[in-house]
Length: 69
Image (tube, rainbow, N blue to C red; front, side):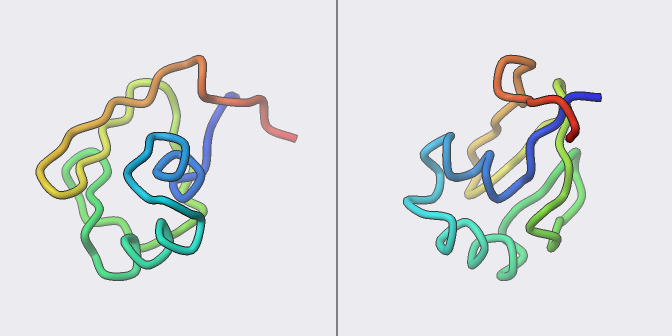
């Protein structure tokens, strides 16, 4: 199954300027995945998942997902 980790997704989406910034956002409970607050940095996202940060909604596209190793 193809997926991308939440902290990586926030970083490549430009929501966070670094991996550390992404982790801080997640730990501060400022990130929702599919309508629920998410506090796990390595949460696996799949195509179609909706991520909301600061009122901005992002949808995970299949192109950013990678095959599970």
